[in-house]
Image 1 (spheres, rainbow, N blue to C red):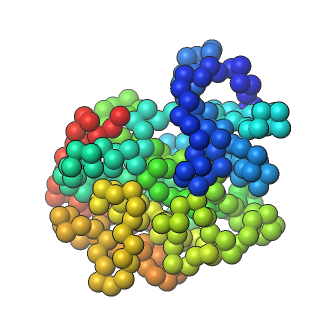
Image 2 (spheres, rainbow, N blue to C red):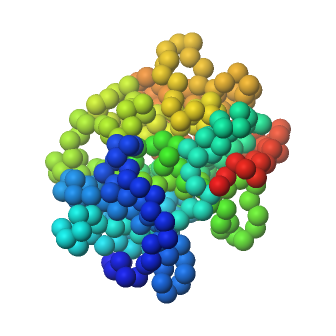
Image 3 (cartoon, rainbow, N blue to C red):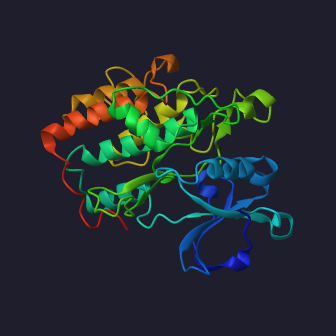
Length: 320
């Protein structure tokens, strides 16, 4: 799936990503010269190439390029990085921006979410992505298991190795209005992106990455087991991100001690509150596994919708 830069024309340069702690040389909006489709050109620098981050991101995205809740890769060009100083990963353009942008829109207008509907939607979509990354199972399989009230077990395929994301935060949850079935959606589809910090079980076993080092991209989202990370560390970061959306802040509440409440008092759904508390357990062994989470989220989500329907639809200014 290698591409040349001549396949695309640059529409807009969005600047470097050093401010967020990553290794990106820039994020550009580009357009395919043949189809006219817009994509993102993520330009990865020398450190990302040398450290293997870019290669791991490409490998993970190629494995999941058809997943509805993982950013789709359109191609990559890492070969001429020595000449240009960066390589490129061409990926899906999510036209509604990201969850960080949603939070900023609400903050700017001094508004708050009307109910828990959007929180549940983010939780559900990302739970499908994380379960797939860890178990190797597709979204449809996980969805069917969750509907049946069952967990998702790991795929018995020696060619697949489990993936941990390690950098979950509002800026990495992207949004698109593109429906999978052509029908209008109440809320946008959430798509998990930025797999540059991800690692596989093989990476750890082979020594390519340090198993005692958690992602340092965004220190505010590190789990209590820092600097170590485990299977359930992603659950902690996901719950902190949901809390950020609920609080309308891009930084989680750092007052993490009893009687700490993961949700603002305006939200009354005890099912959501309890699930967040489970994901935010101090001892990582007490948190859900990625394969358990979709079933748990769907159970709470369905109970909530039975009372409130789909929830109040977001205002037109919510998404760019």
